[in-house]
Length: 274
Image 1 (cartoon, rainbow, N blue to C red):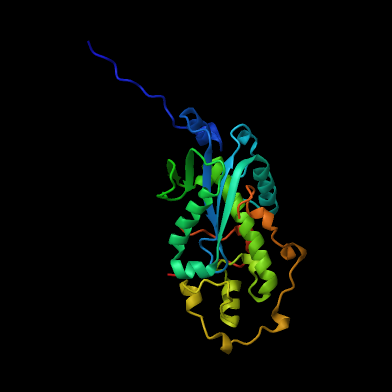
Image 2 (tube, rainbow, N blue to C red):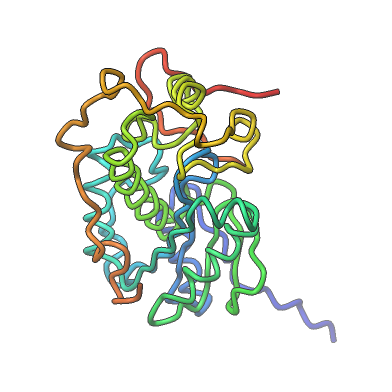
C-alpha cells in the first residue's frame, strides 16, 4: 500500500502579508519571540558604529506603523517611529562601537561582534533572530539573514530605527564638540562638504583613520592649525540635543550603508571612490 507523502505546512509569507508577515509565519512554526538586528553608520568615515537589537511584543507588533527602511524616512518621521518602537518593544538593546575600536579591530569584525552583543543584551532572549544583509554565526539561537530586512520584517525595521536615531543623536552631540566638520548635517558620511572640511582641518579624534579617504589626509596633529572661528557653522537648536543615556537600553543594560538622503543638502552628494 502506497503511503502518500507527508505535506508540511507552508511557512512562506504572502507578498501582501505586510511588515509583520515573517513574524506571524515564524509564530505558526513555534517561534513566537522574534528579534531583529541592524546597524547604522557602517559606511560612514567618522563617528561610531551603532548596532541595535529589538524584539516587538507579539501581542502588539501589528500596531507598528510604516517604519520600513529607516533611511528613507525624514528625521521627524524617524523620531516618531522611534517612539512607536519604544512603546511596542518587549526588549531592545544598543551597542555603540567607537571609531578607535573600528580602526583597531576592523569594521566587519566590529559589526559581527556588535550584533552578538546586542542580541545578548535582550531580556528575555528571543527564540529566533532575523538579521539584515548577511548571516551571523554564534548567535546561539536559530537565525535567518534577510536581504533588505529592514524593508520586509518589522523587528529588523524596529532595530534599524533604534540604531539610526541613536547614532543621529550621537553625531549631533559630536557636532557641538567638532563643529568645523558638519557632523550634524552629514552624520559622518563622505559627502563633498565633509571631505572639504577633512582636507582643511585634518582628521578629528572621531574619524576612522583606517578608511582610505581619512588615512590619505592624516597628518601630525601638531601641524594642524586651529579652525578659524569664522569657518564654524553655529549649531541649530536640534543640533544641541544631548543624548539621553537612558535612551541606550530600555532593559536597563548599558554591503556599505548609504548616507541618509534627508541628511544631505542640495548639491552635497556623497563622494564615490574607484
